[in-house]
Image (cartoon, rainbow over the protein chains, first blue to last red):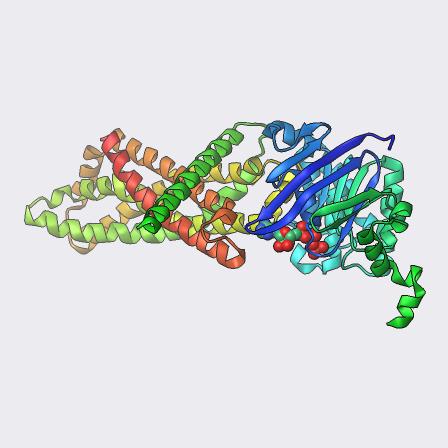
Length: 258
Length: 262
Ligand SMILES: Nc1ncnc2c1ncn2[C@@H]1O[C@H](COP(=O)(O)OP(=O)(O)OP(=O)(O)O)[C@@H](O)[C@H]1O
Ligand SMILES: [Mg+2]
């Protein structure tokens, strides 16, 4: 890897009561690249994101951001680090007593000195990018699940962040919409060169977007590989994952057996 | 036996922990009030929610408190032949004691519970986390306007409570029971001094801060509650706790504040 590693998880352990979820996660995230985290449900993918965001403290191990330990920096520094982040939570976490417009406008209003008119233009641009024109005045409770996701995406992207964290950005979207979202990612990624960390179940489609793929299994990251390496990996766990998720593409005899 | 001590220690640790947490919360919120940017519109919105919307309840309770005071004091004072002191007795008890305390209790019940539930729901639906990840300080964004609104609204509501109460006492004492009208007001002018009003204002300021603090903090830390603050039940128990704790604290604090100010 000749690119710079911006975020690094080193031997991160986390357990809840007797349940050990992360058992020594090591994950480098390269600057300006797209790292996709895949893995079964409940393996701790969202948890990894929360650790990187500094919302959770590891029981042991370190989360480094630009060689600073995210749990040890001051509140002010953490704030500065987070200025670069655009985050989509798995449940979108929209502000439910604000309209879609206000939700997307909030980062602009709180973090920039832009005029209401500029804000309106930017918000409308992002909303139309996410195919949400005309939903300005709706409240999150009045949106469909997929629309909420897209509103969350619009909010995460509104400040043109340097690093984006998307937790299942396309879950709950139809194929056409998710393709459209991937196109948007691809286009903005090419333009803005941001670093992105995406949690997704959308294999194999997401692999087209990925520079690196990390499989989380049994509380450990099973290698952080390029999509090609990932598909051809010798690691039995990765192999199994590839076969179950892309079975129809790679092992046609398995499909016939079903 | 050991189990008992274990429980005791566990409880002690929990409450010390919680006290520390809430102390830091108060500090961060108060500091954030003085940190730019200063925005007026969220504060005005909160004054509307906490203050303006409480005004009807305050007028209603104020009127009846004053009326019952007029009734009780008229009968007590007439035993000593001191009905002429009715005006000062009603107004002093309202301004020094009942106005601030009852207004604070009513606002706790009406607005405090709402604040706690609002913040609690923001917490459990990850909206607080989302704010933090956008590098927006929840203390500045959510708490500061509420604290300001609480501190501004309470003295004003108390003033309304006092005025309405004094008028209620007048209605019952003078109009209904026939105490002398001019001595009702003359006594009040003569006996109510600036210190009394000052005491009322200090109390209502403190209560405004106290109730906003307890209600926001209980909502903010809903997830760290004993027994787990999960979902709707977590928020509902946090809200109950907040209202009870705030009411008790207001009454206890009232005693100490009075003893210091007297
Ligand atoms: N706050 C918490 N308290 C207790 N357990 C938790 C908490 N957060 C997560 N867990 C546990 O950690 C494990 C991993 O959760 P996580 O949300 O990271 O899964 P995930 O990999 O994102 O799954 P999915 O693909 O379904 O979103 C789960 O077993 C969950 O029960
Ligand atoms: Mg998840």
